[in-house]
Length: 481
Image (tube, rainbow, N blue to C red; front, side, top):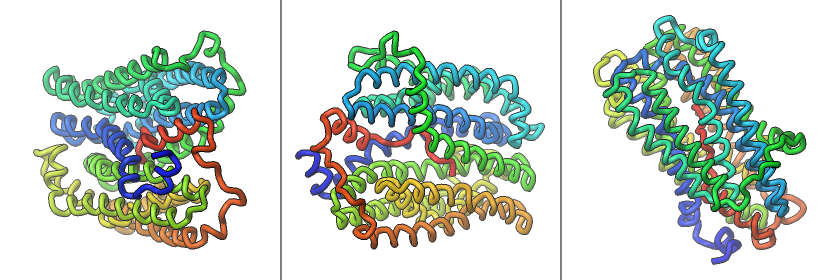
């Protein structure tokens, strides 16, 4: 089946699952990193260890944001240049990206090491949690260059038309982390440092895997020596295209800082630990939806460009139905087996278990409506309305949630923080529902003046790149909330 018939005429359900499947796998694998660390740390060290990882997360998000700035920006720019058949500049993008990632990672590692303790205190670490966070983050920061190279350059592999290699990068890293964590933590008894070292070793393996492909014979766009000379035009293009996801990730880091301080102030370190576990459980439940969202977007975008609006509506509707099924399963699990889910992270601390179960159940109180919101954001992005997509995403994570976190605890104490999550989801869900309903009803009225180009009209390199990116277009870093 040719590309136009595939996206424009084939049955929607198999098509959505074909495009979403690899993305869902990639998302789930990615979620394992912090989840596995928290499981082993929780069972070996207890709630202070989990709190140490949780309070470190804002700094880790900042590190990830830098990788997104260069990784996403260079990937978008490379896709454009490949579509223009400008292979020489595509190689320059790769060479410049490697240099920028290396320099930036070293600078961040140095600054992070120097200011580690004041940063952790500023991000909510109490005197009891601080030593655990220091042990963990001091090693993570030293391995920043592996994380930057592995994540940043892995995005380019997708643009080069090798999505399976890109997905394998994440799988290799996750498997190594899962294997090394229990060895370093339980066998060698290295505690927090062991968990961090396992994470860094997995990132190193991913970086080696990625760079082996970039410089290997399978890549006919491997950079030459002159491509590593920094070019201001290339750098400007990378930074321009990578800034939006970079800012979104920084915003998530800001949210975590506010949340950490509120949790410690109203509930102490054990509340911080409980929220850390709840985040891990929630992320595992939500990852299939984020992967589904990535798979639905190219289908929506293609048919919108082809003015096939009924198929756009059908794709959005089916995406929302599948997403709702996914999140409803997570909701039911949080009601049926909450203790079993929580006790994966710690089976001895009764107070922590009881608090975390309540947090998880509160966190997921309105989970069945969240899938619709995520698909709505993806819909606006797919039809070329990034402002609407950004507002929907920010409304859930920042615009509504942060004010609730700051206000509700003043009246309801610690549980005001916990209930801010479902209230934020409800408000954001209403906004998303109204907005996407209006847009779907008015697709014809707000259509672009000219039909967007079909895949068959594109140069071969760009067409192949778009199909490859559609098959595995999942972001390597899931949203925090």
